[in-house]
Length: 49
Image (cartoon, rainbow, N blue to C red; front, side, top):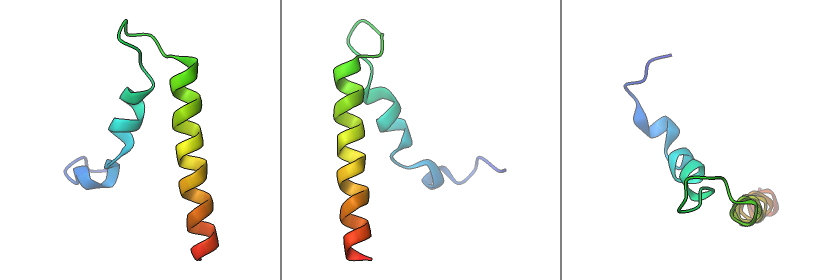
């Protein structure tokens, strides 16, 4: 797979870093918030589909 098309991974980088706390560790509460965001986003997509 070519890495030249960075748009393929758009949004993934933000998701990975948003779960990390200031100390550099993964925060459980941040992971929960991120998961809720994506579940809500995906469910609204299903309803629209």
